[in-house]
Amino acid sequence: MKADKEFSGEMIPLEIGGSTVELYWMNTGVLEDAVQFAYAYQSLSSRRQKKVDAFLCMKDKKLSLGAGLLLRQGLAAHGINEQEAVFAYGENGKPYLPDHPDVHFNLSHSGEMAVAVFADTAVGCDIERIGAADLPLAAKFFPEREYRYLAGFPEGQQQAVAFYRLWTLKESFVKTIGAGLALPLDAFEIVIAAGECDGRNEQIEVRQNVDPAARYLFAEPYFRGYCVSVCLRTDCDRYRKKCEWCPNAQMDQNVCYYYGVTKTCFTTEKEYIFMADCSNNRPCPCTFDCPRHGRCCECVAHHRDNDEGVPGCFFSAEAEATYDRSIEALCHDRGII
Image 1 (spheres, rainbow, N blue to C red):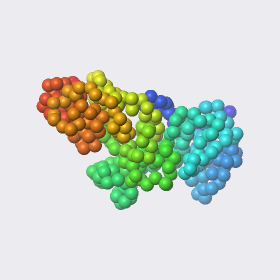
Image 2: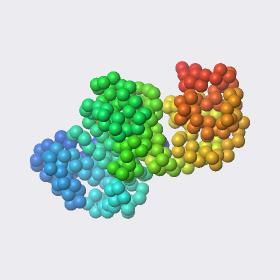
Image 3: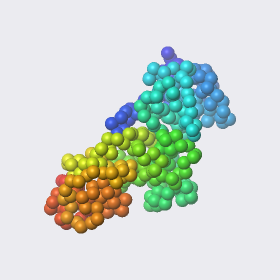
């Protein structure tokens, strides 16, 4: 019992899109002592021991061991014995539990930290110790807009945090879909809405065509000196249904989901793929003459993808008539600021 407690990580529940993700973490410095390392090593299955043995450097062995201990702990919380569990592997090597289809997990480690996440749908995580920003790498492998986002930060700590933050967001998405190195980093784009650098007032979106039938949500728990990202796959059926509704019907006293203030709204990039079948025929309150008049889904997509602010139907009649579609104007109109 003492050993179990000694070699257990801490668990943080993360609320992502109405679902709870269990994040376990451990500082592997607790495994520095050779006796403790050996005791923890013996507690794992032979399969997991082989993963630890594959590393040559003791630092990497500790990280792999720490990740294995967190895996054991998380599985036990779901009633699964790590020693007896059957693992299978996806096309690109992502492990899963064929006997427990509702238990999804992912592991990551960096520096001295190991993390593991568990959810009831596909999930991925990445942790990176913050170092120097690698803008040449970003210029070569990231989409142009992501590179411009990074280049907009002052050189030094701010740019470094932005780089590793973007890197972990991208890695957590890749690990969620199980693509591994098969998916180039410029094949999808992470979009971070304007806000504070720590992300608490930002909205994160991934634009991709790899899995258009799903929506991917993110959480970024804080660990000093590290960037951590957790990505969760959610089914888009409920969002596609809302594609048939007028955006104004989804508004209350908040700004919509896309514009990054709340999660009230409905429409995400993935639904726009289905906009040709959208049966939304509600009267459009917008007085601006354009070819998308009355076609709600297409209108929202156009405004977002062309940086043209908020659709007119989000405003009161008086504010809409000014044709100021900025987020600031909407916040003033709604009494938020």
